[in-house]
Image (spheres, rainbow, N blue to C red):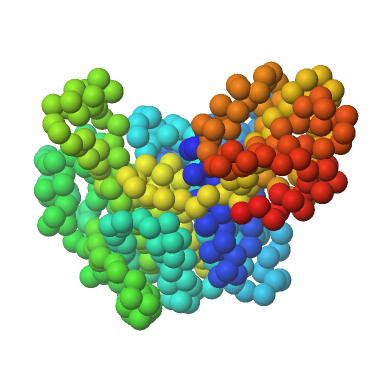
Amino acid sequence: MGEEYYRMQGLFEKAQEVAMYYGYSPIETPSFEFEELFTRGVGEETDLVEKEMYRIKTKGGDKLALRPEGTAPLMRAYVEHGMHTKPQPVMWYYSGPFFRHERPQKGRLRQFQQFGLEVMGSSKAIADALIIRTFFDILEDIGIPECVIEINSIGDSQCRPAYIRALTSYYKKHAAALCKTCQQRLKKNPLRLLDCKDPDCEQLKAQAPDSVGYLCAECKQHFKEVLECLDRMEIPYQLNPLLVRGLDYYTRTVFEIMAPIAEDGLEKDDKEKEAKDSEEEPPPPTKQLAICAGGRYDGLAKALGSRKPIPGIGGAFGYERILAIPDVTTPVPRIRKKPKVYFIQLGFEARLKSLTVIEMLRKARIPIQQALTKDGLSSQLAIAEKSGIPYVIIYGQKEALEETVIVRNMKNRSQETVPLEKLPAHLKRLK
Ligand code: HAM
């Protein structure tokens, strides 16, 4: 609500503007899907599905899920609506709520907003670069400081099994030193071993084999081309050979854009104490979190039952995380207009006619602010003064009878009487 709502809307409008420029078109999918879409698409054994997905059983026995992510639903839409008959690739953007049962904390919510982009129907490296370019442009336009694009390639169904074997055999040798969760991961989903934040596991990670060393010739060539595109566009990136991402559908390119998010760790009282103790207010503590992430998913369509493979690449950013970056400025949303005039009404007759006058101003696209339920000149003038609105319309009993209004300049206090029918033109002339 309040300012936060406008910031979120401003961010959406910026993202939409950049996406439309590059040729993505809008799509919206339902908040509910059949559970199977995610168990098959994202993977039964991923944290996202196993631990975080809200599952719902209907009275009729259908198994549904609140969508934890948007890529599998978009691929379902692509197949269901026969999008392969359209010119390829199909490029989509989407925005809306997603749901994950996580431990709520700053930047980790159970209902959060994502803005996503997908390019479906192309396996070319330029499509990967286009996705990263589009997100980079959005983030650059809103002035995100110090963001880092981390990128890796995790290969495809040809070369990944060899990598997973190497990873498993490395970790098996150190199984005793792994945390409990990682001991499970070793059996079920070895790639996730690389995501663990436990200090002992992190130490082991440093020596773990990396995926790039196991890429087949085609995957190597694809990754090389993606990096060449990024170099040519002068988009800064960091190779992170241990970046794997948590969803099973990823193949080849994976990326994450990290940024410092303000932490809410301190209680308000502590913050006030700290501010008092030091002359200057200390900068808020921050932690590095992924604000945007994605990758290629060439095997997803087949996992969902499509006979033909449909290559794709995409990503999504989290609104709440971006808005938690200190000093990030989002554009003012289009619906938010700075009022030029404050409308004051006095007396019963004037109040009755006020909405008609205001409607005339709305049609003339003159933004106003009003307080129709307030009485008395001084209380209404005080609001106008406080909000810094440059002009005031005073519409009293006399003016209502004479079909005029008084227009008052709040800076030099000059006033003039203007006939109602000339009011829109008169206000438009005022600076
Ligand atoms: P993801 O990395 O799970 O990817 O989420 C993308 C972004 O959503 C994250 O980088 C983060 O900014 C935000 N996010 C995720 N979980 C939360 C949460 N609990 N609270 C607040 N923000 C959150 C996907 O969802 C993929 N579908 C992205 C993708 C599109 N890959 C290919 N196409």
